[in-house]
Image (cartoon, rainbow, N blue to C red; front, side, top):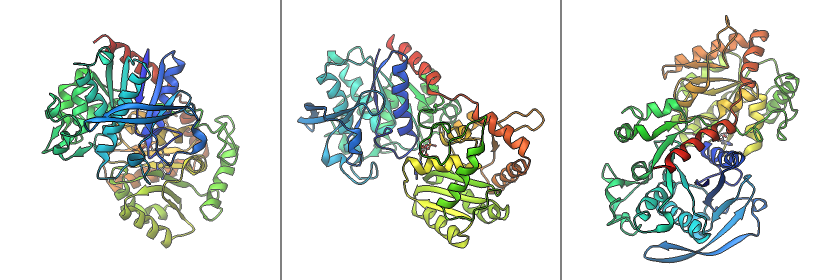
Length: 475
Ligand code: ADP
C-alpha cells in the first residue's frame, strides 16, 4: 500500500507542536508494517542543512494561479522514510512556520504541489493522509481531481484533525484564484461568512480521524466543536479517534543523548542527577529533595495558563520549584517573567522555542509535569513524562483523560493525577494531593513505575491507521 502523509511540520525538520512529532513518527512506523509511506512537507529555510541531501527533483509542474509553476523538491531520509520537501522561497523562507496573512495561499500551494509531485514521480498513492487545515486544500483538490484526472481516480483520502480550533479561515473571494471559485467544492469551504480550509476537508475526505477517542466525542459537541460539531456528527460513521503514540527512539530515558545520566524503570538513580542538572540549568537552588513541577507548552489559552496564573502564589507556597518552557502569547510570557522575577531561585523560565534537548532535560529532571489544559486533542507530553518517571497532573479532557489514570493508593494503580473542573482550586487540590504522595517514596515509586512501564509505542497505533487505510481503499 502506498501512503502519502502530508503535514505542515514534521520532526526532525520543523516543529511547533505535537503534529510534528506525529508526522515524524507515524510514516516511519507504517513502514515497519510493510507500507510504502512517504512524508511531504514544505521546505522551510529553518530546516538544518544536515537533514537535507543533494537529491533534488527539479521542475515539478504545479498548476498554480492559472499557469504552471515549475517547483523544486528536495528529498531526505532523515525521518526514517522518504520525505519530500516542497521548495517555494516566496512562501516558506520566512522566520516562522505560521502566522502570516497569506497562510492560506502558502499552504494551498503546498497542497497542490504535493499532488503534482506524486503525479510527476508516477507514484500513485492508494491513500493521501492530510493533517490539519494546511493540508485541507489537498484533500479537497483530490476530490475534485477524481472527476477528471485518471491518475487520482483510485486514490482515497484520510483527513486527521489535530486541533479543531485552527480552521484555516480566509476571505472567500480568494477561492477564485485558488481554483475553487466555480467548482462544486466552493460551498464546502463556507463557514460563518468566510472560507475554511478545514471545513472543506471535513466534507471532502473519504474518512476522518482525530488523535484520541475522547476528543472525537468532544468535537461533536457544540462546546468543543468550534462551529463544526454538526458536520462531525453528520459524518460520525466515517470518523474515528486514535490516540497518538510515542517515538521511543527519541523519547527514552535509557538511551536519550540529551540528558545528564540515563536511567530506567528498574534503576531510577540517574533521575536525581538529571534533576540536579535541571536545577543548575535554570539557576535554581540545588535542593534535590524539593519537588520540581514543570510545564512545556505553547503559550496559548488552551494550555491552561490562566489557571497557572491564578494559582501561582499558592503553588510556590507548597514549597515546590516551578519550571516553564514555552513560546507564544505575550500576556503569558509577561506573566512568566513577573513570576520568575518575584522568586528567581524557585521559578525557572525559558521563553521561546527551545528545540529538543531542553524539552528532554525537563522531562528527565522534573518530578511532576503539569497539563491543566482547557482542551487537549491528544497531548504528548503526558506520555513522554510517564516514560521519564515524571508524574503527570492533567485536566480530564481529550487525550489527557484517555491516557492518564488517577492514582489509587489502595490498589496501587494509576499513573498520575487528574482534575475535572477548569478551575484554579481544582488544579491546586490535585497538586497538593500529588505532593502528598511525593512525600511517600514507596507510593511515588509505584506511580512512576506504573507510568514508565506503559507501552504507548507507535507500532500498535500504526496498525490501527493501516486498518482504516484498508477500509477506505474499498470505498
Ligand atoms: P500541541 O501540539 O498542542 O502543541 P502536544 O502536547 O501534542 O501539544 O505537543 C507539544 C510538543 O511540542 C511536545 O513535543 C513538546 O515538548 C513540544 N514543545 C512545545 N513547546 C515547546 C518549546 N517552547 N520548546 C521546545 N519544545 C516545545
